[in-house]
Image 1: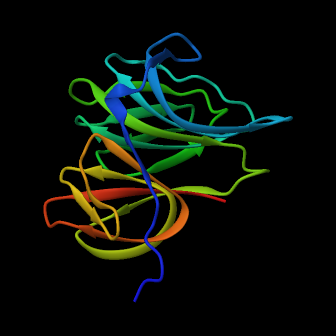
Image 2: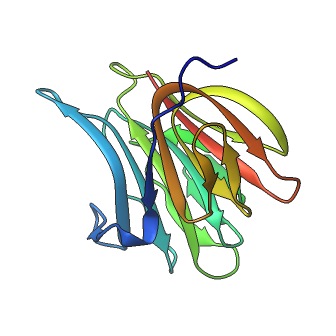
Length: 182
């Protein structure tokens, strides 16, 4: 039995204003950020990538990128190629020079950038089934999710859980990205 129901804010991602990337090569829609007197602690955003090109450099930061629409990206750095496939979080240093190549047409990706000295952050993919988790927020992929005490959260929305323990039901044809920051 639950003694309380989660209070969540549901954000329509396409309603967020588009902002230019740090390097001017595209646009992003900022979902949330935390800063302090030292600067950026973390930032969560949704980027639209419609051409090959370099990534912005974020000195001292770590990144987790997850393609949420489209076929994927190849992230080329000096010694490796990172395959950023749909729905699969990939982590890398924000200060690594990276050139991206579209696999097949434009993509939209979820970006989590954070300072590892001041925050622990992750993006985890949940498949079909019932899950209990604690998170900053949840992004549905492919199908609507059912969040206990909140209701249906559709693709194209981000549900802010703000660190609460929540129960999520992911349908067989869907998935969810869980963003955790501590």
